[in-house]
Image 1: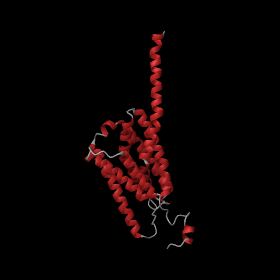
Image 2: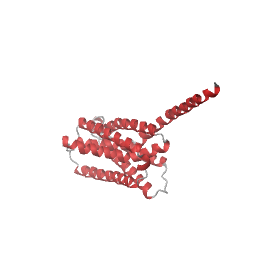
Image 3: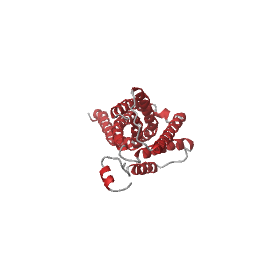
Image 4: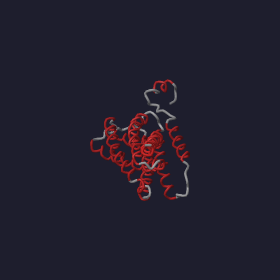
Length: 250
């Protein structure tokens, strides 16, 4: 009897070990996705703001993150091959650097115009390009987060579960950032600088693989950018305009 019970006991112990690993690693993967997706969320929020209409912004985010979920799961399945395919990583790095540079230049030219914000309502034809841009941006960011997740565990189902939860969290945080972008002056610039930082990191990793950039340095840099981004409210914000009007500056 004892000999017969040993295999079932072994299976039970292994099962307990596997569940213990899931309970330990899944929150870690979700936290990793959340931390690495903060700059992704603000980029998606800033891109979706081109539509001006809040209803269309929500539609664009929902459609784009549905697309992003499919692309991200495909990326996880093919991670071992994709993460070694340097042309894709190079394209992702160039795209993120281009997105950072083009948006910062566009923002600077808008500020130089210094007029009222000409909010031309976007029609249905504008929705598809915005959705595709959002999906492509998330895919470029996913190379970084998927590489980090695969380094934590090689369990495919676990990494995929973390990716799904990460996309859902991304939808919530992007929605929050859309509102915050109207309140904080430097937040959009800080977000795009963080996008450029991720692109630069991908490029350095490709061109100088021997140069190890510490993870804490990357996180500290993004945290510093976000601290600056939240450091100043817009003077036209409804919460501060009455005090600003009475406080004299200007």
